[in-house]
Image 1 (cartoon, rainbow over the protein chains, first blue to last red):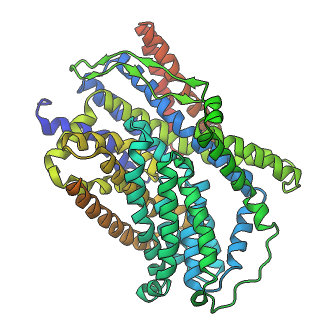
Image 2: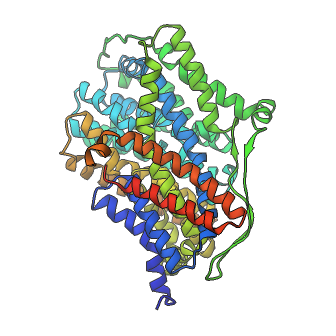
Length: 515
Length: 57
């Protein structure tokens, strides 16, 4: 019976289905659901798809190498965020922005669209919603709007945010280079930039407010989408989200001075720390990452030590062959995570020398980093490892074959929805790319479509999924007294998340017909 | 037992993460040397680690 294609397809789907059901209907965390998915894939792969101990051993090693590439960035990004936040700099940046304009639409755009994206660029993992929502409540916005606006507003920057962790995951699982993946990813995410800005404002006060802020959205959106495109295609994708939102902040503060947005007097609140000092860590980050990526001698010097393993040809008991080759290499000192770590250490020393830390600050920073990093990492490792088992036993190929048979030439319309589903179920664009990246790549290959375009749609859908991921909405609601009342926020973000994803799907389909 | 897991939740998760990242290196070495017994042993350890992750938060 297991030779019937549809039965094999259902078995191949079962690990992903397990994760979906447990996270959505049983409210399990990503790490627990990932472990459950790992067990299901191990059992199904052994009983149905001819996995043997040696195959599992090699697949797990490949999984760990892929995971380490992503975890390196995640841990370093979290460390940098806590190094900065512990000084009170994030709060100081918020107050600094508030002093620029009293116009509600500009406040929504600067906080909910740009500053939330900036926080996504430097931290991610729910931080943008958790930090911005209380700031918006303090400015007089309703709690539901205060959570929904940053949730919608920051989504476009998720893939290249968090120092490009999600994009790194996409490259890792697909085995494709940034030069091939970045142009289409940055293009689709660039379109999403404008849509997120428009709907962030719309949530607050409908089309009237959108019309009022249209000029600001066009100017700032062009700056952010353009900067993200330039940075990502020039190899500096680790700075894609961060650089774009920083450029957006500058243009946003300039736009706030335009006469039409300067009718209401701004706030006169004084931060405890100067804005320039608050931003110092990020200036250091720009210098370090730019040097590590753009100066050939520095890049060559840092790239001398690489952790790499070779793998033999692996054949499953059912005859599925995985070719011999090298696993994902880890550039120990030149990796994006390493550059982040250097920036964090320099920033810590600078802030410490200026007396911005309380005693024992380093202990608090490390504790907070571990507390937020461990659960995320467990989810990523378990999901990557089960995705690798599936990949080595033909399960992903069978899934892709089934999807391409059903959807055929209209598959590009569906691609972003799969990314959205992945982010919704796992609470993360990175996890979505890990779970569905190879599936989308194989399906694109079987349907004769551009893998770069389909993977761009995957990661764009995954990024947009951040606005509807219950895990992130829960974090935001807990900071504005909406704990246990997440329904209205989720209903709002779901509406616009699905709408923007639908638009991205149509654009992907149109482009696939042209290229 | 439940109290122990609750009290040491973060520590246990951190240990599980370290095991999940380290065991595959042993699995790889054992597989490269063709030692099926060792591969099975480390796979059993990996299963044990995943069971720990599966434990309710």
